[in-house]
Length: 127
Figure 1: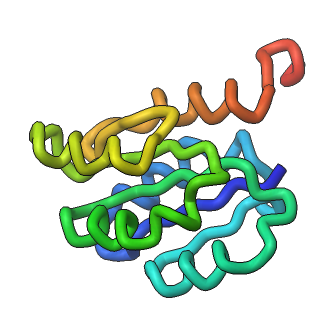
Figure 2 (figure 1 turned 45 degrees about the vertical axis):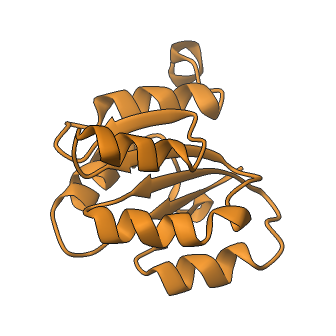
């Protein structure tokens, strides 16, 4: 199963997220998109093995951009990383129907644990 990542190249949160999950997912099973245009273009193609999307929003604009293409995200299990913990931001994020919510100021260990469970890895598989 391929994992789709959306992150803006503007801050270090994307790098921290990549470091946390790179041991879980081989490079050839990741698709990384850094613009809403690239992400939208990819999602309008056949999904093939896509099943999970990890979406990192660094600000309300990037969250709004995702909301504008939500119809092409419907078939994916979404892990959404929000830019802040404000009630309005969280409400906007829920409109994408994520399976899991986290925040850009976290260390992303929670995201890695959820992703690991979603792709069916267990600690026994790593031994």
